[in-house]
Every structure is written in structure tokens, then in C-alpha cells.
Image (cartoon, rainbow, N blue to C red):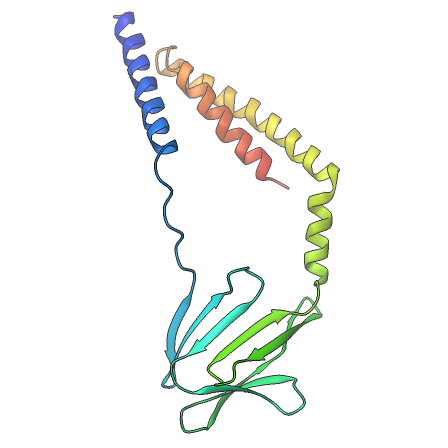
Length: 184
């Protein structure tokens, strides 16, 4: 009877390895288009990041963009030339305004918005990522999480007849490590 459990565990392991190997050698999927499409007040639009991912490009089906006097905003007009809305060239978050540079195409149908300077939030995130203490803390949390997850996996494996622990301990340790690494 014990041989059946070992054989079943071996077959499950072989199946999992075969599925993982087949997935690892599969052709990569084509990148999905990231865009927002819609129609507002009779003006159709498509907004998407540029190829470098450094700006947002919005293209209109009808209507046009134009810069406001003074260059502090962009005006969106319908096909008849009536102004529908005004878009300020700055995003305010947490009391700080990040300026945006606007480029309108010659026909007025394409608007490209690019951040002008590094924002304090981006600088703060870059500092946290570059801090070696952050990475060390995450690795410590991952180790503790792996130990706790492995312990939970051992308890579950014990209730599955003892041999089940061969599967539940690594799974529990992996899940615990991921949870531990993702905590701040």
C-alpha cells in the first residue's frame, strides 16, 4: 500500500515537471496592446504609451487639440471647433505638482504628454530600491516566510499520510518566501 503512495507522488512530480518544461520551451506570446479607447461627447480617442514608455500619446478620430494661450493647458475641441474640455499641463499629487510637456501634431489630432522632470516620488522610490538595507530586509523576511510556510506544509503533509510532506513542504516554503519577500 505504501508503494502506491510513493508511485502516485512520483507520477504527480513527473507530470508537474513535464508541464513546467513544456511551458518553459513554448513560444512567447505576442505583446498585448496597452491602450484606452473610447468616445466622449462625439469625439473618439485612443490613448496609449509611446514605444519607449516615456510618454502618453492620445489620437483623436474627430476634433482637435490645441495649446491654450500661455501654454499652461491643452484644449480639446470637437469637429465644429467648440472647446469641450481643458487639460492642465501638470499633475498634482501629495502637494507636489509634476509638470507635463505637451506636443500637438500639425493636424491637431495627436497629443503627446511627457513628464518634464523627475518627480520627488520617483526619486524616493529609486532611493528605496537602491538602498541595500531594503533588499537585505526583504531577503530576511523571505527566509522567515519560507520557514513558516515549510512548517505549515509539514503539518499538512503529516495529515496526508506523511509522504504528502514531500510535496507540501516545498510548496509551503515557496509561498511563504514569496509572501515574506513582498512585505515591506
